[in-house]
Image 1 (cartoon, one colour):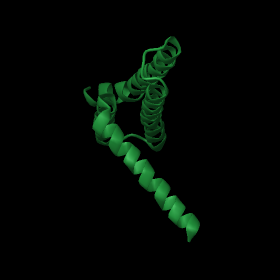
Image 2 (cartoon, helix red, strand yellow):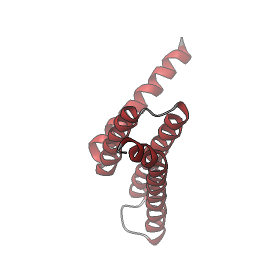
Image 3 (cartoon, helix red, strand yellow):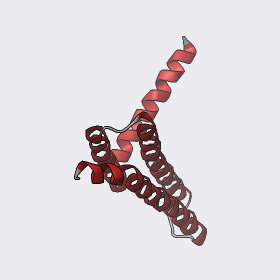
Length: 122
């Protein structure tokens, strides 16, 4: 019973983390809204199982990197609220990770959606 309670607590903490991201992180809201629109369009275009898998993995990747970025920024601010060169470096590198994940998701989106959209409008 103890491990089940521990598992449920872990789920509860994770849900709190998602709520916090929605409440405090504008970029997370943007990424999430785009993800919902992309998923709706993928359903409309009849994606295959492998296309869904790639799409879901890509969306999850962007959102997870955004979560990690938020966590790192908050930890850095907790440790040293003042601007320090190493703190700035850590934040800049994580921001770069988010940017790269977002750019990669755009490329994946173009590869997945462009042929289907071109075929749909022919």
